[in-house]
Length: 116
Length: 110
Image (cartoon, rainbow over all chains, first blue to last red; front, side, top):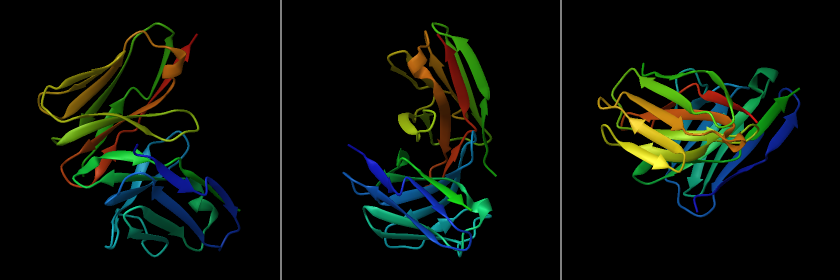
């Protein structure tokens, strides 16, 4: 149990285009989902926390207009990188948590984004 | 702001040797989790510690939570090549936000 999928697993796009990444909890209801960014050989940096049906809470320094997060249902959250630039290239990982157990996170496999 | 510091950054061991990674938080934690990330993979939840002074074991792995709930450790006895990866601690102060340590990369030489 507690499986989280992420799609796509990798994407290459041209500078200026937008990319949507999906995060799904396959066998449980995720009241809270988290989006992280991880640079090579570095730790996970929390970008935003999203709760189903409400606006995401962004961490300081993360542009909400650039990284659009939608948590439309208890099993799906999406991250859209708008007008992507090469500096947005990174490994994006989502995680999902159950109600009242937000500290126990189950991670998706991640999405490798490369912006040319 | 809240910080979670983790040491060492890297550890090279010979197979069969023990390994320990340490985490220290600048603030008192409600709980702490440990994750393992294999090279090229994603973090996998290992365990959560909640109580002051708590000690939990999973086979060769021993997890401790300090009395003051500001530090934690992960100890692996007799490492194996399958233990290779990066071990992250992640501290939570009671809200939704979890702060990850920088991670300790473990290399095991056969």
